[in-house]
Image 1: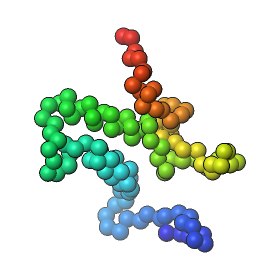
Image 2 (image 1 turned 45 degrees about the horizontal axis):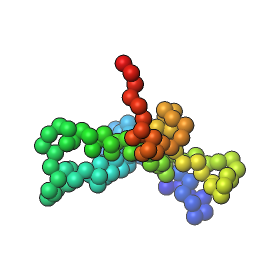
Image 3 (image 1 turned 30 degrees about the vertical axis):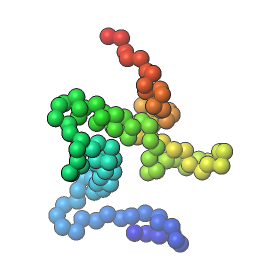
Length: 119
């Protein structure tokens, strides 16, 4: 770890045993696993929430992924603003915003009232 004063400037990752991993940080996967386990009772141990049918698994899992990618800004994806705007130093972004699928944080109301595409 490299610091500038009291702030962390950067982290250097080195492989100590074996070849370097392509993605050394499992933080993103662990965060998603934690969120999915927290939101879906059927994944936790010793629970009364069962998902014995595909529909009972697919619907809540899909909603959890939607919430994770479109509704909740992630602190690691925020962008520093050139000037403070309305008392904010950073522009909050969701994963969907970070890869360019949308330009704003979506809401549950938008999702629930969205019309499907006509085929």
